[in-house]
Image (cartoon, rainbow, N blue to C red; front, side, top):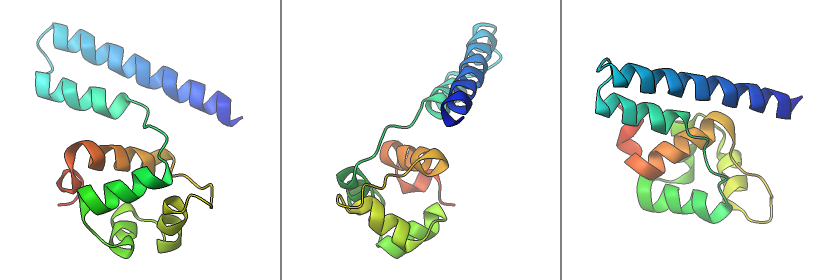
Length: 111
């Protein structure tokens, strides 16, 4: 069932992106908005423990508890993601937030 949902989500994102490209072709979407749309429609990468730690320490420059609060997850979730032995990895909306933080910095999601 999860694979079927992922396929449906990808289809919807691809259709949205196709429509955005068509709108850009008619000068109804700016280059900046198109760049944002492309970023939002990309599937986030699989994050390893080393990736998560690197993003938190080098990009966000915050503690595990602050990082957890920003991502709206528990501190233990961040600890598990940063532990190679746990086998746990961020997914869904959290993975997308990590992708944005990795590319644009923490300022992109924190007001």
